Image 1 (cartoon, rainbow, N blue to C red):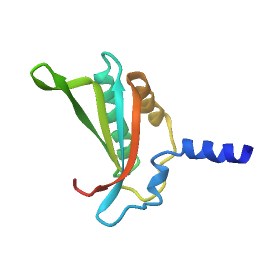
Image 2 (image 1 turned 45 degrees about the vertical axis):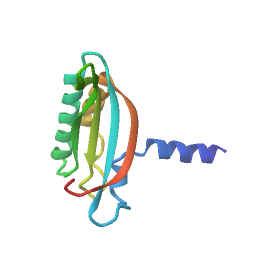
Image 3 (image 1 turned 90 degrees about the horizontal axis):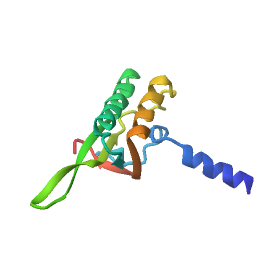
Image 4 (image 1 turned 90 degrees about the vertical axis):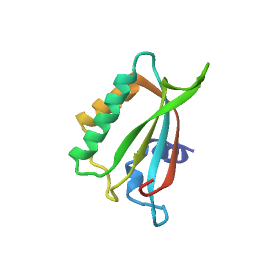
Length: 131
């Protein structure tokens, strides 16, 4: 029982960067993670700063992985409106090597994510390249 719990704990704590090593995606696609986050009131700018710092961390480690911030539309009285209460990020993994060790810069951007949002859900997928 303890062994199974340790295995489950290991799977839960595995990062998306760890998934970069073994790429199960078919040719013409790349591994990606889509996250839907609920942005805390007044925290849109902090969330956007987290995404920028996230990309900066990858760039500083010569890793081509990049995260895009996508605006979410909600229904308004006269049609769709851009909301500051939800966001989607799409991380496209560009490396097939293990991610760099987590350092102070990594902790800084993950703290910004935690400060500004709550993750609603996460999906790993094979995204068409260039799409």
